[in-house]
Image 1 (cartoon, one colour):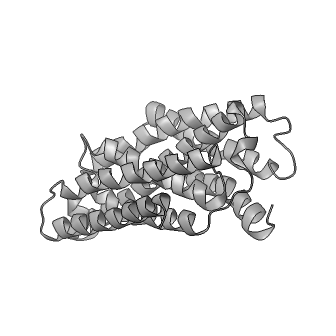
Image 2: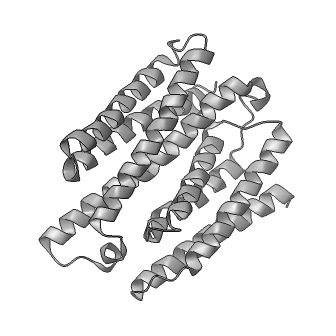
Length: 265
């Protein structure tokens, strides 16, 4: 077993142990931070694995599963940063196993096409800001789903223990719009850099990605404006956050899925 495989295996194992600890803590109605400490170890080793692969390949590997692994790592890192001052550790129950799974897929289905060395700094900037934006909207979409569950359970019957472990609705909603605002910043940079640095942004294999990304930007920006001017929240925020995220999901992964795994380009 080589070094990168060993590090990836360690990261996957720690992600899963961290998930188990958080579930156990919720079952016992107490939220200790042992699971989060392990999650920091998991994301650090995940980062080390990514850095080693970067060094070996001479750049980022933006193939389908490697991109998914990179996004999952950033999502977990952002969650852990938020958990420093907000009680959002329960979100790790969904995100940590996802990160472990994406890392496992990246480890077992490594693909060297397209070669990372083909990307200059401009294209790398565009891709990396796109990945960070998608990561932020990923957390926002999860927040929206949990908000919907939390709101439904609080209205209909005494909430389950997992729902009780979540932050108050106001805190969850505040974090949702913080993630949306930051995501819009990075998505804007991604779109602007794309128009500046990609010669034919509306080429046949990019047109749907460009259009879907622009539609998502309009939705998220409109939601933020509506929040500030009209006080949009609750079901309106949940619905449009999920619609925007689905558009980005199709834009980011739809093209990669078709081009790399189906057409093998």
